Image (cartoon, rainbow, N blue to C red; front, side, top):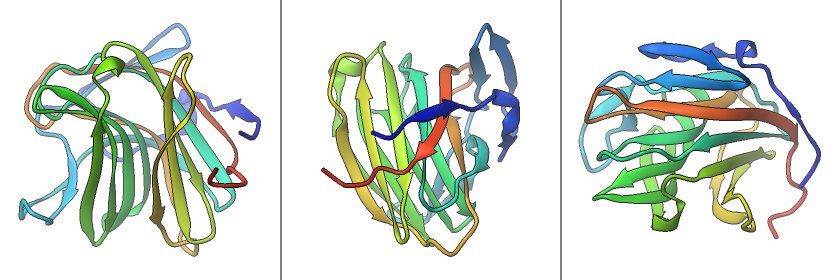
Length: 195
């Protein structure tokens, strides 16, 4: 992995302001609004575009990493990294609780959303790092928890000719009171290879 440097929390702009944002030392605590989510049409027929994403520009050739505590307990609680160009063009990647189990995955939206996911029950209560590398025509998503190797989560198409921002995000589609602890936000060069 290429070298990374820390991004200050105040360097970003919220896509949708959360219920509450507060500093706790170097960490950022974010309380999500009940019903917040990001999805477009596929399978469910609805559009949600009110995820809480704290975004800074992510040009082609750059990567973003976020460290987040996985204290997620309720159906569809989710947190990780959001990359967004506009309402029709975005990727969210991280961990989401589905049917009582933490799931590592990504939603890729190019007008319509799709969702890839895999169970990571042993990640519950731990701190994960989610990393997106933006290439000329694709984004590579990786994630890990401390002491483990990076996992390749997804290689997904994403247009290189559009301006996009990226950073930490969280949502609470089914409940009030979800507060997520983000420990760090970093940027650097995109990964040179997939393997």
